[in-house]
Length: 86
Image (cartoon, rainbow, N blue to C red; front, side, top):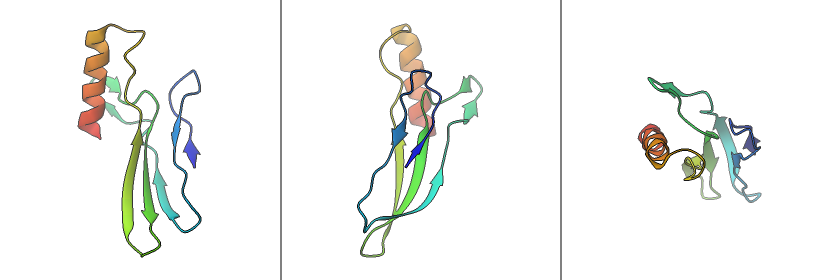
């Protein structure tokens, strides 16, 4: 399952499960914001998955801001905001 993110290069996050692991729910956090604006560069997709034994897993799939393009200080700041939200 893949939910489109905010990355204009088409870099997204998703999850793949085996047939015996059911995806119960999906929640996108692609539009989450804080006082500095949009938090996630891609998405922080939230999945509830039922295991074959009946347990439920909560999985947050994220790829924090890369180290490229912007200044190191800006990148570090963005990753800290993302980690705090996760």
